[in-house]
Image 1 (spheres, rainbow, N blue to C red):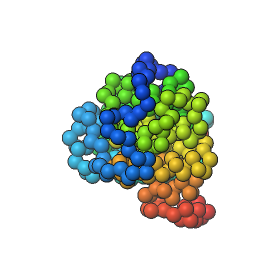
Image 2: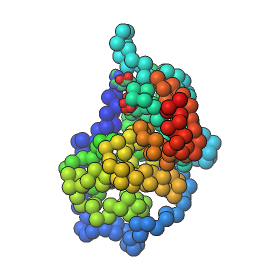
Image 3: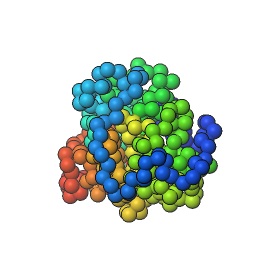
Image 4: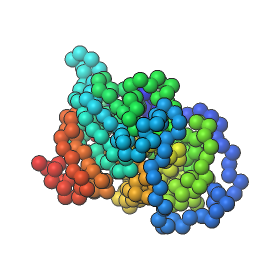
Length: 299
Ligand SMILES: Nc1ncnc2c1ncn2[C@@H]1O[C@H](COP(=O)(O)OP(=O)(O)OP(=O)(O)O)[C@@H](O)[C@H]1O
Ligand SMILES: [Mg+2]
């Protein structure tokens, strides 16, 4: 991702793709996990000893996964200025699925991009597991995005020339990180991708592409996964698969997920939904139902 443009940078593979698998998975010597087998719950992934993973973040629960304080985002200047965020205070709890909803133009993507270190706020601060992003250099932010944050976008943003497996492991290749094959095995099976790993995006359905994008987002066991309308381009069956996976990622893999959505049905999968209006937090619901969301939006 580019901090300057906020646009994903997955279109150009910066490193040669990994060598092709010599055989179809399983990726480990262990027998493949059954697709429906519930995954063993594990605590939230502990950070590596990098800037974003100092001792404070190792004390589970001490800091929220993300803390936003007084976030302001202004695009442009003078008469052309657009005030996308107007002082947002928000805590994203660890190991929870948080949905962000609001009308088009209310600042949902702007908030996600600023919290995900894809863009800098005009004012205010973001702390990732208690560590302020403001002090990080561009290089440190790049490392942070690669190693500690995961992204899922409406348009999938897969590299068309790479196979599904190569797309999934691309962040690890870029970061020269060892592949945790057992973890990747779990992701591949949970997402039902085992028989699609050698396919390129053009040979996959939209739902399969988004499942590959989900596996890529979780490949490095990030502190937080940010998803901007992950089901926006999918039919309802494919959308359900993605939502079920994001729920599983939280409940069974201990991941923290923040998801922007327009769909009250999607928001109902969340532990909490936060409503934005005109660049500010307008309310929230814990354990929302679809009806709760519709009622709030209608008010
Ligand atoms: N790069 C940009 N330059 C100028 N204005 C921008 C930029 N990005 C967003 N905006 C403006 O900021 C406001 C908030 O946009 P944002 O994309 O955050 O809204 P959103 O809630 O995600 O909307 P949608 O539901 O349509 O995706 C809008 O008025 C938008 O036009
Ligand atoms: Mg948006």
